[in-house]
Every structure is written in structure tokens, then in C-alpha cells.
Image (tube, rainbow, N blue to C red; front, side):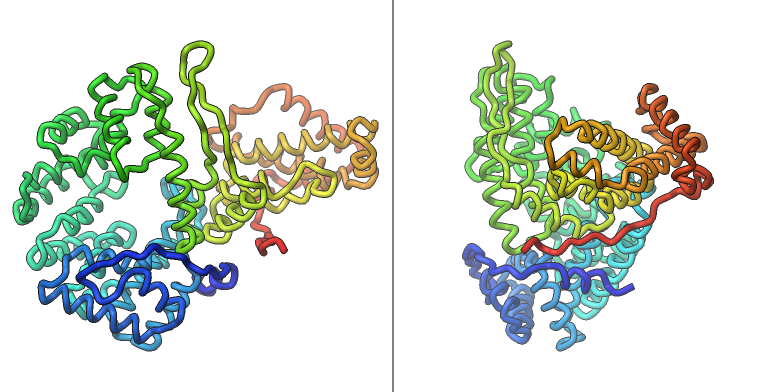
Amino acid sequence: MRHLLHGLLFFLFLANPAVAQISDPYTSITKDELRKAIYAGEVRKVETAFRAAQAKFLRGEANIDDLRWLNEVFTTTHPDVISFTEAWLRRYPNSPYAHTAQAWINYKIGWIIRGEGIARKIYPDALTEFSRLHRDAWDHALEAYEADPRYIPASDALMRLANSTHNQIKAYRVLHQAMQDNPDWGNLRRAVDTVQPGWGGTWEIAVRMCEQYGPMIDSDIDMVLYCKAYADLQYFGKNHGEWTRDIIRDNHFTNLDDLRLFYSTSYHATRAEAAFTYNYLTREGVTNSKYAIKFDRYIALKYGYDFISEAHQRRARDNARKALEDDPYDPDLIKTMQKGIIRFSLSEGGGAKSTLIERLSREEEIEYARRLLIIAPYDPRYYSGYIQWGFEKTPEDFLKDEPFWNNAIVYSNHTPERINSYMNLKFTQLNIVQLAATGEFGEEWQTLSETVDIEGGIICPMLRAYRLFNSICETTTNSGCEDIFQSLIDSYEIILADATERNICISERITPGFELYYAPIPVDLSAPQ
């Protein structure tokens, strides 16, 4: 199987980035200049720039975060950056900077391909590709680190990759050395991120890290307490949330205020929490549409505040549209664009009412849905998203979405919920065709009813899904098996009996249920002309 990144380069279109000028007094090149050099294919210039940046850092003329800031250019899905980095490695095979850049590209795309959720719910091929990309990323980062142990983006990458590559012990050694060389919160935070519960971490491990390395960081605040508060709010808040919120408030850890929003925007927020949330969300430069919406929905009217979320949503969308120029397939950015703009107002009943007032054009929706499928081809949600926008409810598009439904079922690992949705679709399609035959929907639909393959396109696929659904639910306790109405079961049984009497859909009727699983179908993801 060819490297998935190479496949992405075939699909991804080229963009002309318009990046805001960001000036940094410590580095020899700005992000804007770096991207221009990358898009122009100036490998030597980029290599020289990173050498200069690292040399300035080692001389104490640059801040540790300046290197991180510059390397962010490579946490991207941009096709030009991906292809440039491969060329950079070919020309400078021993460059720690090129290896680090490749590590960060693989790290990001690996997570996108894997998607969200626990491993047992992820499609096996997605997990395989995720593991391969992250192992490759680890190898690149390790080669860079061994070439220059003080190159911070390389050690950062090793800590970020520790869990997914099962290299936690090596990463802790990297942390220990990094804290000797550069006792920095960024190093410690990335190490604390590796102890999250879903990857075998515990609160006790986080505490030990904080207590061992926190005192090494030069700061005006208690970094041990700060570190514990971060770990608790980020990963362990269900057990220590009240304690942590008090610690952050009493010690004025303003850099952790964003983590407090999870608690302070709930329906049960106190007046003091409401005041904190409003003050935080109205600070200059703060954009957080998720919690601004929660504030408007649950808190604003309760404590007499103005609605604030529409401005946050507009800023978030503007920021995402700009960022997509340099990271065109990033799912989080795309989802920000897809959410639309909602406005809160006072309802007749005195509560908060939300209204969708603005959304993307259908053409934009299709394009973003297409991009998500290109970058994350194993995510069933993105096939459903493409179905929503890629096909119109017209005779011309009738049944054309079949491959996308098929893949949504496959990549969900054949969950009963997905199969049930597909069965309902087929039942609806059968009703449409039967009503269309009476002329109820007009001449075009009536013509369709006369030409459509009802058996091959609707009835037989419905019976296959129904029998597979039953087979799965008879042998497992999967959720979704109970989410089917008895009236529909009765209808499916009637259709099955009719198919048996007419001797149609033979394969779908007699094949053992466990042999009716679906296989992926190639879909056309080329951009509309």
C-alpha cells in the first residue's frame, strides 16, 4: 500500500496562501517568509533558516517558544508543505529540522485518519494507518533528537508521540534531559499530556511529574500547583474539579482560565461563575464560540447578561477561513465553517431561543464535505455528511448516494445504528417510488418510477441490510439493536415474505446473515467542474 500522504497529494488542490505578517525579533525568518520559501520550493533557504534559528536559541538569543512557533508551519495538511518536506529530506537526509518537520506532518495526519473515539470503535485500516504514520513520525523525531538533543521541536514530537507508539519510557527520559537543558513549562506540559487516563496514565503519575519538575521552572507563580491544576482540569477533573477551580481562582492562574469554562458554563453555574465566564469571554482577543454558546443558552438570561455568542461565532469562522488557506484539509477548521451562525434571543416563554441565521452555500458545503473524505477516508460521519450535501432529492440523484451509504456502514464497523438508518432509507425510497407511480410527485418522478430497478436498487438491498441487522443483533449486545420500531419489523417481514413468494433477491434471502457484511466501494471525490 502506497504511503497515504502520497495519495493525498493526488487529491489535494493547490492554494495561494495569504498569511498575515508576523514579525519575530529572534528568528531569521517569519512564518510568512517561511511559507513563501516552502511554496517556492526553496529547500536550501528553509534549511538555512532553521539552522540559524537553532543557533540563535543555543546562543541564548531566542526564546524556546520561537522554535516551536516556527515549526508550527509543518503541523498542516497543505499539499505543498507535504511535498516540500519530502524533497527537503531527499536533499538533506541528515537534517534534524527536515526530520522533525516530517514527524509533525505525520503526527497530525495520523490523528486525522484515526479520528475520534476509543480504539475498538475505529475501523481497523484506520488504526493500521494511524500506527504506521506515528511509528514513522517517531523514527523521524528520534533521528532528529539524536542529531541535536537540544532541538526543542524534536523533543516535543517525541513526547507527543509517546502514547501512540508505546514509547512512554523513552519519552520520560527525553523529558528529564529537556528539563535539565531547558526547564520550561512547555516541556513539562507535553509530558503531563502523556499521562491521560485513556492511555494508562493516572493522577498519581501526573502529581509525581509536577512535583519533580515544577520547581525547576523559573516563574513568579507556584509551578507545582499550576502543573497539578492543569493536569486535573484537563484530564482528571471529575475527581478533583472543585479543588482545582478554587486553586486557579485563589492563585490567579489566568493562563488556565479557559479550562475552567467546562464547569462555569453549565446550567448549574453560580452567579460568581457566570461573572467569571462573562469577563473571560469578553476579554479582548478571546474567541471561544463553543463556550460562548453555552453561556448564552444556560447563563445569560438567568443572571441578566447580554448574549455574546454571535460575535464569537463570526470571529471563529473568520479565523478558520483564514487558517484554511494554509491548512486546507484540517477537520476542526472545516467543522467551524460548517456549523453556521446561530443567534440567541428571548423566546415567548422567557427563555433563550436559538435561530440559525447564516450558513454556507451548498457549493461550499459540498467542497468541505469532499475535503473531509479525502483527508479522513475511514470516518463514517464524513460519508453521511457528503450524502447530506452532495445529492439532491431529485429523480436525477435518486440512488446515486448508494456507495456513500455502503461505506458509512463499513467504516462504522457495521454498527446496528448505521444499518438501521440504511434500512429506513430503503423503506422510504420504496414508498417514494410507489407514490411516484401514481403521479403524485409530478411527471419526472412518475417517469423514474417506470424505469428504476426497484428490486436491484431498493428491495434486495433493504432485505440484505435487514437480515444482516438481525444476524448482528442475535449474536451481540450492540447498542442500536433496540432502536427499531415493531411496525417497521412487521413491514420488513412482509417485504421478505413477498420476495420469497416471487423468488427474487435470492442471494439476499438465502445467504447466511454473517456473510452479508459490506465491503468498501470506491467513490468519486474529484472536485466539481
